[in-house]
Image 1 (cartoon, one colour):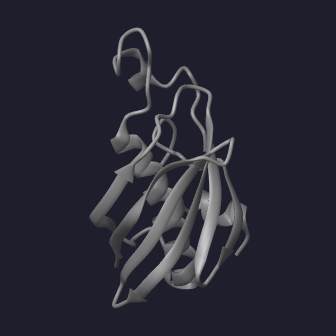
Image 2 (image 1 turned 90 degrees about the vertical axis):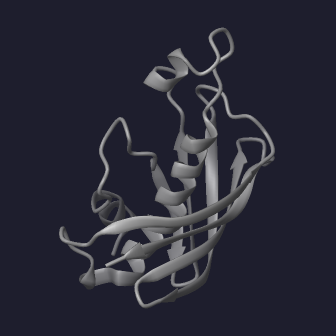
Image 3 (image 1 turned 180 degrees about the vertical axis):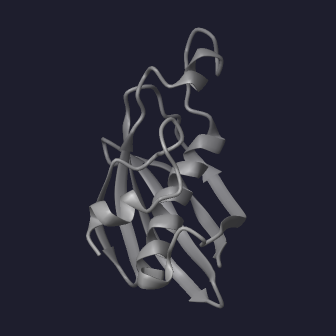
Length: 142
């Protein structure tokens, strides 16, 4: 399955699709990126004079790239329009802020995938290679 095929199978659309590109994927992990457009609606109210990307959105980017894209790859032909995806846990440490127009990269390493549950160690870096946030995310794909 190509990187673009995986992205096309994501159950999200704009404005809630937070995957621009996948640069690497295999049975052990995934790498991808997303650029935060300054016109995204949440920037209008998340700190009036100095917009900052909300932590919940950073977590969502890590989940979409680091968990869902990897899950689609691992399920391969068993992933279809009836597959249900649910986030089951996330423990994220936030280190740096992300501002409008910043590009971030997500690297995810599979901890385990069994019985439809995928758990990954994820990290996000900014364009300067600085760590933005990191942690573990788990979800079910049934």
